[in-house]
Image (cartoon, rainbow, N blue to C red; front, side):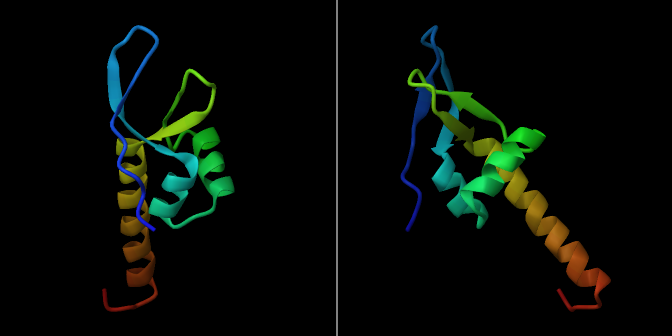
Length: 85
C-alpha cells in the first residue's frame, strides 16, 4: 500500500509548513513499526509537527533523511561483512 499524498499543513498562524506523513505512513516508508517511529521521534531522529487535533505528523523531509541514513548504514555494514554491494 502506498502512502497517501499529503499536502502542506498550515500552522496556527496560517503559514504553510513542509509536507508530512501520518505515523503509520512513516513506518511503512521506513519499513519499521509504529513503535520504532515513536522511538526515533523521541531520539530526535525524526521531526514532527502537531495538528490542531493534537496528533503528531512526521515531516516528510525528516523521514526521507532517516531513510537515506538507514540505507547508507546498511551498505556500510554489508561492506564490513565482505558482501559485494
